[in-house]
Every structure is written in C-alpha cells, then in structure tokens.
Length: 121
Image 1 (tube, rainbow, N blue to C red):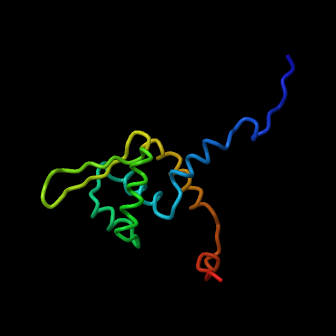
Image 2 (cartoon, helix red, strand yellow):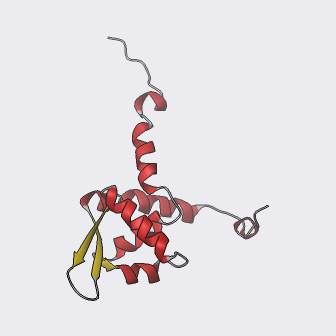
Image 3 (spheres, rainbow, N blue to C red):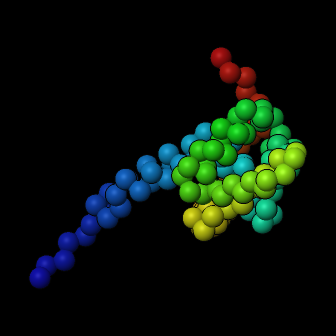
C-alpha cells in the first residue's frame, strides 16, 4: 500500500479547536482559570480581588459560562451570608498545560513597548 504524506489540515480537524475556543472565549475566562490553577478552591470575593478590572456582573457571567461548560464547579453552602466556592473540574484542570504553554509563548514574544500601549483609533 502506498503511503501519502498528509497535510496538517488533513490530520487535524478544526472542530475540536473551535469548541475549545468557544469555552475559553472572552476577555476574562483565561485569567479566571489561571487564578483557579493557583489555589484548589477560591471564593467569589477572592476571585473578584484577583482578577483586577472585572465587574461583579461580568465575573458572575463568566463563572456561570465556565460552570455550564463543565470547566468550573460551583459549591454553595447553605449559610447566611451565602458562602460560594469555585474549583476546577477534571476538565478544567486538564487545561493547565495548554494555558501554561500559551502564557510561555506570550512571554517569549518580543513586542516593542510602543506597540503594547498603542491607542485604539
């Protein structure tokens, strides 16, 4: 049987990548995940302090999306005031190597400081 050389596109479907990007899309989700990588459990207020610049409404929305996608688990304690904790699921923890590689790639890029602070036109 004759072997033919397959191209990258033939061996790698983009469907899986598109699904992953749907889960991670948005300005805040990757940052939220990085903070959850650093601690086994974080309360809502801890996440809010850790992710600087995010509003309470946006953090709630992003955490709900991550929970819906099976990346984050939300545990609510029946207390007053309410106690809510967030932790990574098995699928969420599996993202660690990929996001660590993304962070490493971003850190290795040589971007001139003028390009980093370029105002939007």
